[in-house]
Image (cartoon, rainbow, N blue to C red; front, top):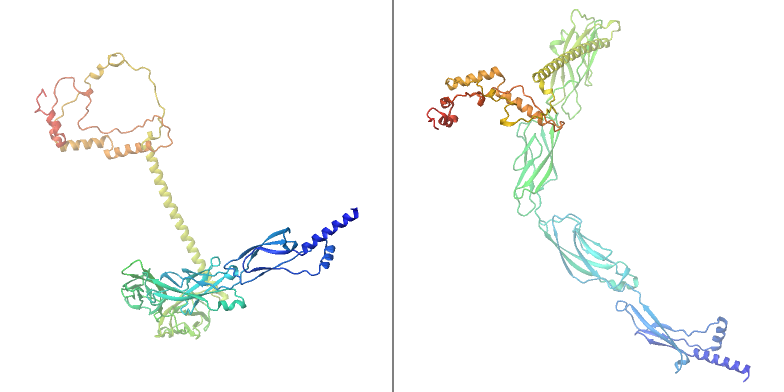
Length: 631
């Protein structure tokens, strides 16, 4: 076979193989119910051949996968199919290939939420505040994602006591308290709650027409509540000046619980009012509106059965005004008239004030007293505007004849009933000079007062300095006397240590010290005559006065020295010698040392011990004259 023939034969085999692929088929090897494979029919092979030449790819035999029945994502959301492709129309010896296709169904909102519990029971305390969580309810939706979002609502809720909010994470409905509940008013509540999806398409709306509902019963628990006042606050009025014990008003509080506990009332921090057992407030002092027009009281109610339950309410007491204060000068006037003043000259303008409160504006009436009008050097003119002027009634005044004039003025108010006061205006005569101005008189008076004040201040300062100087002198004398009384207190005996190397020879050493000198009877104990006990005490007292201070002073001195040594924290732990100026008066029995005793064998007479009292009775029995010598 020639080379050309071989080439042509190979070409024919390739075309046959290609044609056998185009007549192959696809087969669904492993599928599921509801899925089918649709194959298109290729009729024009020549066109496919030309297409192959242009694209330089083999033509593909495509298949379309379609559903053959209704599918439900809630039952099965994923399908897995295996597809096999064969050539040569699937004849034996044909080549094949397989592939796996995973089909996942997307969700639509075709299910409405449903309560699995048709009844819920919750409890809430009547003392619970607004916003308290009562319980949680739950509806279930087979859909997922946005299609499962739910909304809870209360049907026909006229009381507006409860509310439901959604938990976005768990889609639970949280029942909360919107208003406080009262066990005595209503001890249980029933509400019906419905649930629906938030996002529903129009074509799926018919599936969500009848929303699922559940019933919730809320039981209110009784609590011991504090008392409740009938009013949130009280306002009472009382005229001023009423006697003690006048009733102001009555407050009332009740126990909201069923047992109706009695109440005890009390006032906090009030000295003007008191309250009795039935809540009546009375006065305990006279009330003056000019001192205080309003009183703010706090009344406390306490349950008798449970003193821990307490409530309080504010009580405002207004003191009503009565016309009990007469008008008076608005200030202290210092009035001067010049010696050369002319008749009809204005001396002073006066005004008045009234501490009472008037319903209308205050209006004052000024009059000159009748007794003082006929012989007065001044006249008064009422300006009808709550002021009046004082005019000179004659010309010429003299400091030599009369220096001061007193003018009596009557002031009346428009109260009910009207009150009148008598006021005295002091007018001083002054030498005004040619200026005829009273300002010079005021300056002279001020200088006189200032001069008097300066002299008084200087005198006070001198007295204070004398007093302080006298005190310092006394303190200096006491300090000096204290320093000279015990001069040895300032001496320092620390580290005054003397060393001796000679230790002596003991009792056998007769050279170092002559013991015979000690045995000489230089001091003989004389036998004292027996004295009475009272006489002996008086003698000892006189001796103590002559020798030194008594035992109390001596004891005090020793304690001071001991305290001084103990409290000296700056002193190092050296040996210290403390000297004492007084060593005591001695014993009434004399010296007990054997150095002053007689060297003879003569026995002493101890009969005087019987006179010293019960404390020395045993010694008297032991050493008395009745004792035998051999004892």
